[in-house]
View 1 (cartoon, rainbow, N blue to C red):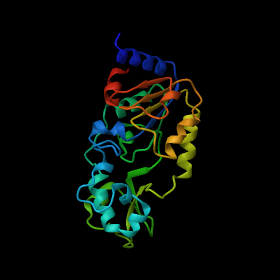
View 2: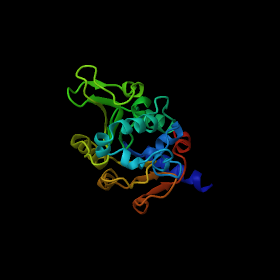
View 3: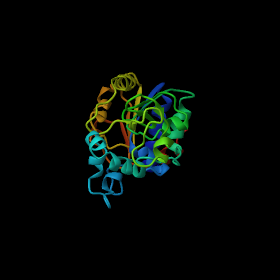
View 4: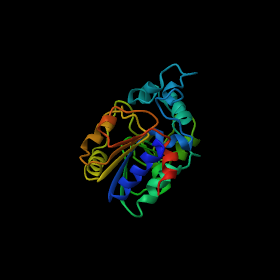
Length: 244
C-alpha cells in the first residue's frame, strides 16, 4: 500500500476511534475555495505590487486609524471573498458533527466553516461577516463594507464602521480563547489543517492537547510535527475526499 493510502487508513481509524474531535484550521483549508493564504509565495503577504506599505502593516490597528482610506482599499481587494464557497474539507468537518462531538478552532476570518454547516466554531481572529459602528455599535454584514466606497460610515450616527476582525496590535477575545482552549484540551483527537502554526498566540493553543491522536494535515511541515502521531503532507480537500 502506498504511503498516502497508509496514512489515510491510519487517519480514518483514529477518527473512528474518537468521540470528541477538535479541528484547528488555518488559511490553507480555504485555499481550495479560491482564497489565497498569507505566507506562501503567492500568498497575500507577498502581493505587494502597487502598494506603498507592506500587507502586514496594512492590516494593523495603527494603519486602520492612521491611513483609514488605504486600509479599506486593501481590505476590500484582499480580505473579502464574497463568492467563495466551502470546499470538501469544510464540508467533511461539518458532516462529521452529525455522528461525533466536533468543534472547530480557526484562525480564518472567512466564515466558511459556518457556511458549510459547522455549529461550534471558535474564530480566534474574528470574522469578515461581522462589522460594527465604532460609536453606536450597530452591526453590519460583510456586504455593507464590500459595497461601500472610501471609509464606510454608519447610517445611524455617521461614525466609521469597522470589521470585527483581530488586526495586528489587537488582542484576542477572552471568551473565544477560553472556548478554544477548552475545546482543544477536552478533545480525544486534535486535527490541525492548513496552518504552518507560526502565528502566535493562536498557534500555542495546540499545546493544551494531551491526547494521543494529534494529526497535522498540511502541504508543508510545521514546527509541531515532531509531537504529532500522524502528519499528512497533502491538499486538505483531497484528504477529506478519501475519508468517510
